[in-house]
Amino acid sequence: MGALIFYIAIYFLGYYGAHLLNQLAGRAVIRNRRMAGLVLALTVGTVHAYKIISTSPPHDHGDGAGYALGLYVILPLTIITVAVLFLMWQDRQDEDMP
Image 1: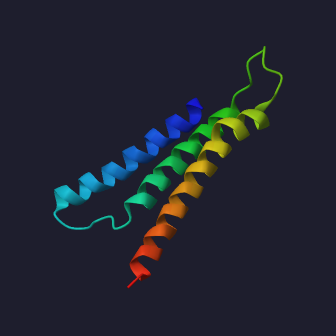
Image 2 (image 1 turned 90 degrees about the vertical axis):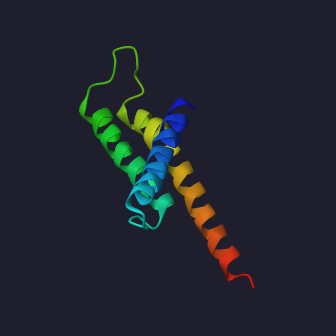
């Protein structure tokens, strides 16, 4: 749950960072803010996954790096990616309606 909240916060930092950049520039520098937020979340997830894989697990955790990688990186990023793709699909459906 904490990892999901962490990656949602990272997503919104990217989303609103792209919005702020567009506002400061006075034009659409980054057209798709949802993708900008998703790219930032995936980038942070990649760095987080590298950190999990490259360090040894604590002594009291026998689950291994694969379990931690799946629970703390892959699962939250999959949930966020599915939500973003669903919202983008909904926007396209709304634009196609007469």
